[in-house]
Length: 531
Image (tube, rainbow, N blue to C red; front, side, top):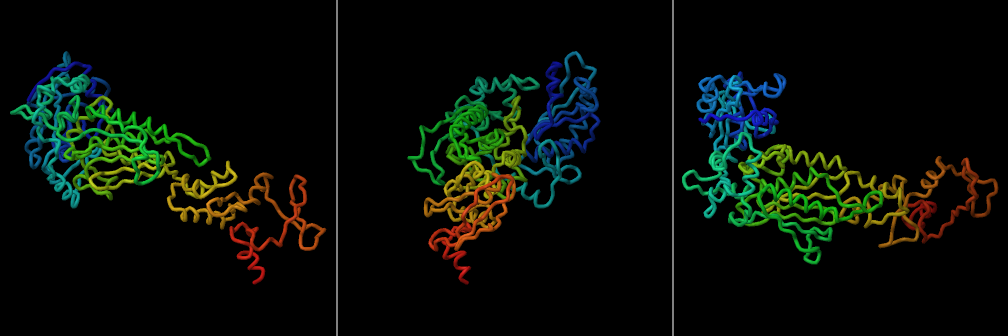
């Protein structure tokens, strides 16, 4: 057990830190059962830290919330709860913190919990896990799933042969990280406490290389880069001739890889223009939170044991992110939005300790993606496993019903063809697009453009409806008092005086039927007249 004196500014950082998946604070008045729950939950989840000696916001503000133990002996309740009352005991380390010049406010106990390979039970014989900033108990099949997932050994803990603590302590990324770390710690002490090196040999672990090495592919014997490519096509299987320019390779510590991949992908996306429902061309866009969550997940949850890169493909109508490795642990496509499991808990936990962590809302990432896509009126992304990749497909397909998209397009255009309809709605089948047109025809909204057939066929808003909109009121046809042989004069009641219109009732049998069905007259109304 260590005792450390910290400054008031460093204490304020701890006091003001928001509770999260990896961080919590408790009052010295907390009972042993409360400490058991948080300690076992962190060990059963991804690990993390909590501090005993900070009051809730409602009990004061600033440094007044720091109310610690008078002596180290008074903190025995914490030690007993962690070491004695949890079965099996959780892997932990702790230190006592005191504010310089404010000794009367006592000692706060900072506890670091590592993710364990065992399932831990509190004294009440319940299993607790961490979800976001909350602690939950699980039972039944959920405990079984957790137990099975715990048995999976993660590659991030493997030792590297030619990279050790002496190399690590000089890395710029580690020094940058520790400049913002609270409470302050020396690089070698940090590496030892976080189990990023072997205590005997000093050899660095894979997680340390991924997080802090200047060039991770040079020290980790697997590929850990991101490749970004632009394909000028909508095809599901792009070919080499669709590739635009040279694919971009992004390398570096995990934090930098995430930031650079986001920036470069965003620029590529903005270079793509897509047809909008209003008929205008505009840059391909996604909510920034969506792209960030997908890329962050690909970097921190990929399988680093697989010798391959993360692939980001930008198409004309979608973005695909392919992360090496199938779903980890007990995760399935069915529980993807409900459950969580970290293949690389050390990477996930430590990257969350940056001042503005990319994985801020642990456990909420994919739910955020779904919500933000809906807000942007885009259809939800598709998740699937293809070979050795977990794939996220972000399609640029409007959330509105295809029928609504067609009518919106016709608000600004005289006609719409099947190909344009498929582009706007994301429908891939030509026949399925026809069904949308037929539905609107049967509802009296649209009709086929006369004289256009085959590949040139098109649809327009129904003529009567267009006239009605132009006049601002319903159109009612009445017979004229001067009928002629074979024809009738039809006038329109309106506030405006309109010319009489001759309407033929003897349309050619091979011409499109006047009812707008798209069929020849002899096969439509003419046939019914004969019948």
